Image (cartoon, rainbow, N blue to C red; front, top):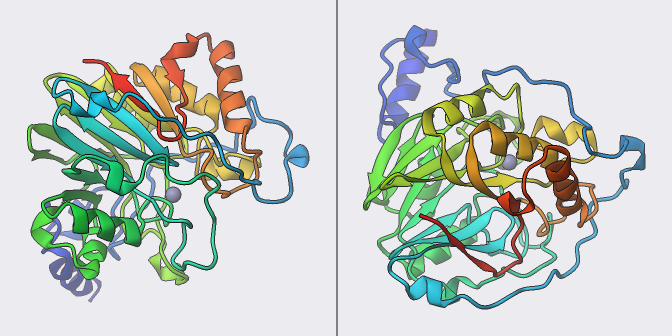
Length: 347
Ligand SMILES: [Zn+2]
């Protein structure tokens, strides 16, 4: 009976899944028989490392205010030999890879929420409006949480870029199809699966995290989560998505398969009080990951934009600085950008 149910579920999903598992016993460890997903590494206890004692962390959500928005370097978008990253805010970057435009976890909305009147609100406006960006050819999505998969932004991007391709984790395609994105423009991958988009090679890689949209508990972990490695001509970018450290084994493996990585985009916010490190990494853990995967440069994300948890707005940047000194990495190897800043990447 269970197996029959499993087969029916599988048939429903087969339109978007690439790998076929004929038997339940063949399922990869991170797949559950009910079609949901799980982390397969061991969750280590919450960390405090460079963080203050939980008792000193503010009891209210982060007070947000406008951070500076900068301009300049737009010529990099026009340069067909340049690779650049523009920080829009939170985990949204516009990566211009020569003449190819990529958006990561795009959110241009006022709130990270299913409704427009409630939910975490942004302090700083998007560093660049969608209309001011050059063409978007590819959107990569790490998971379905509202601050990473925003319906209004997805629809605006599609309206403006009719040929854009969306690369998403398993089971997220059905959400996009429901919103009206054509199935043929969606690539849906499982951990370690790869696909080609234009001249770029994309691999969906594991992360320790969760997924959930809506109020129903049953939606928890019903879609997969992860990060993306994008490669072309030996140049590699790792967009880590939203991650906890777990026992570090997923990231060791990413390092083993892809090191050296030229540029990593790593989250540094939403880690206080320490219980949040069950879902996120602290700046110190981000520096550890930078070292673990052999990243030449890392750029910080997931901070300074939405009032999501309890650390002060400036804490992630300050704690990143402390962690770099403590772990002895040069200041310029792992840095933050200003909203709207366009940063050249190297080949
Ligand atoms: Zn998340």
